[in-house]
Image (tube, helix red, strand yellow):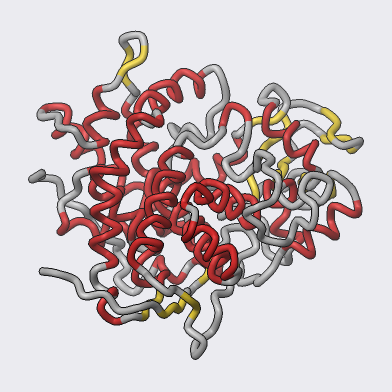
Amino acid sequence: MATTSRIQDFDDPTYNPFLSHEDNFGADADPYPRIHELRAQAAVVPGSFRQLMGYPCYYPDVPKFSVVGSKEVEEALIDPARFSNSGYEVTLGHTFGMGSISVMDNPVHGRWRRIFQKIFLPQHVKTWGETIVDPVVHGLMSSFLPRGEADLVAEFTHSYPFEVIYKQLNLPRSDVGTFQRLAIGQTDFEHMPQAIEAGIKLGEYFRALVEERRANPGDDLISMLATTEDDGVHLPELVLISFLRQLMNAAGDTTYRGTSILLSALLRNPDQLEAVGKDRSLIPAAIEEALRWDGPVLSQTRVAVRDTELGGVKIPAGSYLDVLAGAANRDPAIYPDPDRFDIFRERHAHYSFARGPHICVGQHLARVEMTRALHAVMDNLRNLRLDPDKPAPAIRGYMMRVPEHIYVKFDRVTVDG
């Protein structure tokens, strides 16, 4: 779709948002031993997770706690009357905007979330898998299939969920490079001036796109968001623009991380990779196990609405809580031998998409994208294995997790055209 909108890059041409991951999320190869240590101390421990992992904290000068017991994680996530999402105001609120549903509480949150849920229903998302996701996946693979080797992160997983979003939004190809720089820069909270700049410039860009699509709606996601209503009411501009700002990170970045972790885990367990190749009905179990074993986001933020108690610990009103999905996902009381990746283990619902009223609205799309990617890998990369001459994938980050590289070899494939 042609557009008269113009997207503006960062004022500082030397700023590179793609170098911000380690500053914001660390380079820890394995935060789980520390998480197990914390759980052994108590279900709720003093201090923010960042501080406990040796990093500076973004939160205000108020009491801080990390929730590591699975029962307490569930309690904090499902009880918005005691634990508010307003803690995201100091980070996401500054960049995505205070209209982000991530910073809202009920009843406002529930009203606008209903509109998003209408759009991201499983039956809608399934059609995107066929019309948008598959062509993107196969287009990316065609560039490396003839070589018989690839870095699956650099050449595949890092690009494909973002390419899916570009197609969903029907963005002009000329805008894509700058758009991704701004979208990634929004969460560079170690460089907050650039993060705020990114949010401002994306907001200006999206306002112009929304105006154009409302005047001439199509079947793209911006048109759907601009025209879908609940009880005759459309999304307010503040909420709509905030959601569009957030989409690249919520749907793109986390899916890239989750898919990269899934492929890393299967490649490092070749017997399980072989099993999935022989029986595709195991793909859902593989995806859920990857999300449990090393979900791309280990922690969510909540704020105590009033003086309360959690796990036997007194929590003063206004306290910030890091609620560790990553701790609940590796609770040995729920998952025997929890540090082991095992697609055949007994299934229990994981916490990687959160719980309660803020459970991830895009979880169905994430599963569709991961499913389609894994099918494409099985269909096209025959005799897939790790490259023995290059480093094995190393998943890093104390909070947002991802491997930097996945070097593989496979049988060469001739690509027509």
